[in-house]
Length: 368
Image 1 (cartoon, helix red, strand yellow):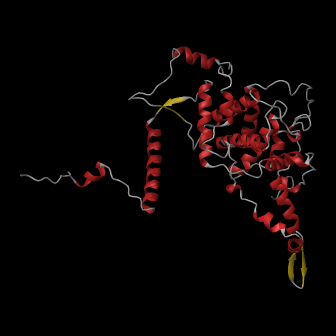
Image 2 (cartoon, one colour):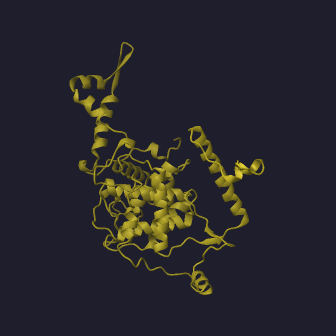
Image 3 (cartoon, helix red, strand yellow):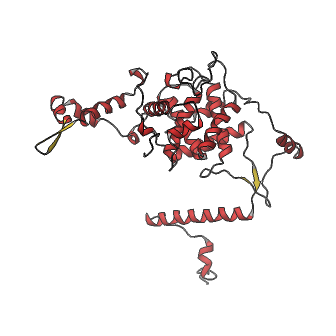
């Protein structure tokens, strides 16, 4: 991409994974690509090597025709993927219900003073005052969203059922720092504050958005479903790093390069980042599509998780300026929906206000 230090300039090192870890769809596509990429020029006409291969092996035509696009893949019966199906329950919300008590969070002095001054009462809206937070599904609050995503990762680690892992995510085999990794690195679950600090550092240094945090959680749960893995104390940092790396490139228009993450994590190499990204994509079967309905589901489930763990979003009284902005946004959306409905031939019913604009409306009556 014009930078000698970018990921495009380095060749990925040889993978240490076994052949069983590579998805069969990727192997089949890679096999066909090797045949189609070899060509030669004879009498001014390009002949591909795949033509001769198809004549000798007619089954290749059938195999290539059976390859489905990512959007055409359907889950097998009885299998629900929450990162694809908007009706399937999210994994982090289900695992957070395993323990009713939630987590113990130390309150700051400001929170204690605010709690004592209000007498422990929750602010509620009234006819004169409406309390709203500054987080919406289209523009989430960055700090609160990162906290909720970190809390979801915390429950994934704490309430995991197995310890299925891969070497590419193992922090002992691929350390992020030069500091020695303790021998019991896979025995103690990280606290929520530790996870939040790691994710917050990456988001602040790379200047990522709150939407990217939600996409990161979607990719994490998709990885757990497709690759049949578990987030554990030994691999959570590299799994989160790979999800953030991929989400930032898919979501943001000006993506952060792999070499930029090496400036944030000083001891990691570009080759390691390239290999992490490549294997993460393979394990996802190159399915990086996130439907809007799935995105909205994860956003509202994160808010539900926040309320269950007393991680409420700060509310403020609705001001006149913000009310005008919300009203303007509602009118723009209403006009857009109305224009789309008229374009499709759907009749839009008018209200009494629109009917009575031409003067008082008189009904037809028959007097006897």
